[in-house]
Image (tube, helix red, strand yellow):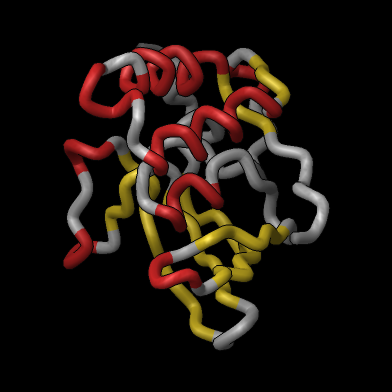
Length: 137
């Protein structure tokens, strides 16, 4: 597997995600463990200092699966807000965990469903809460 790219997470997202991951039903879940690993290696910044080109929670992004060339427009959300029909992808889904904290142009190889490796690259960010001034709770 390729070297993991540097990722950045807002302190607000980190606090909310750590709270989510503390729930007993998630503690042993492989997706939760993968997300915990990502959070542990992330650079953490206050929300008001987040660069506008970083994928944060509730960001709307376009990413490309470089192994298939498929483009995906998704919004990265907490599990309770996930809705595949509207492109709202849970941070606990393989794609969601992989995208959190990446910058535009960065890519990551991430284990996906059925043992397939997702080769994801962030192409653009249409909306990021922090860049839009939404830095509150």
